View 1: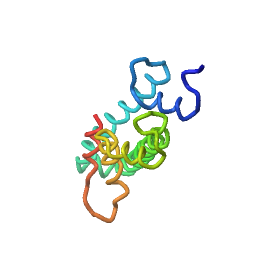
View 2 (view 1 turned 180 degrees about the horizontal axis):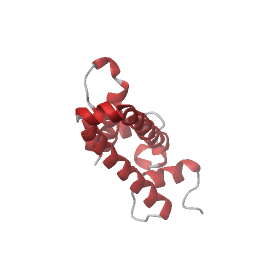
View 3 (view 1 turned 135 degrees about the vertical axis):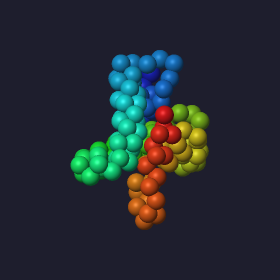
View 4 (view 1 turned 45 degrees about the vertical axis):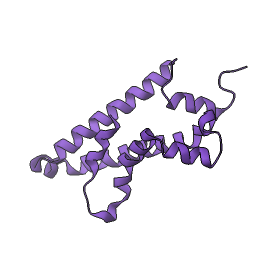
Amino acid sequence: MSPHPTLRHYVWDLCEPGETTNPLESRLHMALLVLILLNVAAVVLGSVASIARQYGRWLDLFELVSVLVFSAEYLTRLWACTADPRYAHPVWGRLTFACSPMALVDLAAVLPFFLAFTHMDLRFVRAFRL
């Protein structure tokens, strides 16, 4: 029998660090780590007035793309988590996963972007993903 009986299992195995890693899993996690580090650098650079004036549009675009990537990753994990026996129930399993510490950190990293009505700058929360 295949170690990945369904697409959901394959995606879950890619998203969740495990004992065995394949090259795609390693590249995916490395790319996300690099994106996190670049986001931290962008937030720091964006706090310098002269840089924000000159490159603010690019930094905003980078933030938008990053939030979309992190949101897609979070939603993908939420979709695929039922492949793990701990989260097998379609509703309660997803709620359990969503309340896990790492999922809460991931949610906290993207939620500030979507809470534009708070008028608070919460971009620093992305550093918690590290």
